[in-house]
Length: 113
Image 1: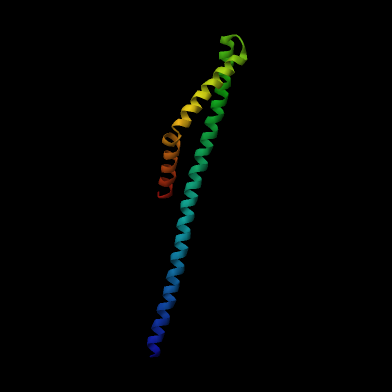
Image 2: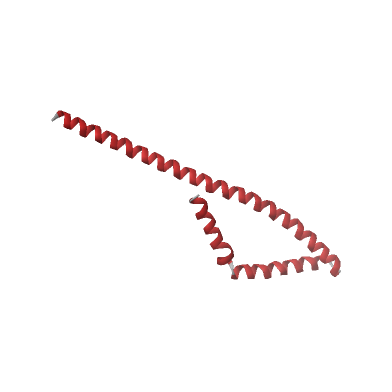
């Protein structure tokens, strides 16, 4: 009888150890996935910031050049602003198709990588 109770106690101890190990493994896998997604987002954000700064300086140059061609420097800024208004309206119309869906797909792809 004691032998059988020892076996049951041993089985319960091993089950507890298995549950603890499985829980720790799940935590570590979640941490790895989170770190991978965060690293991907931060690296892409750094690239986006660099391209944004490039775009800003380029747009200022284009606005000044257009202003010189049109006779007044502020005309160039009005033309560039009108272009961005038009681009913003188009982007707003297609935001789900062009931004939301690809971003969701990217995040899911990174999470299950």
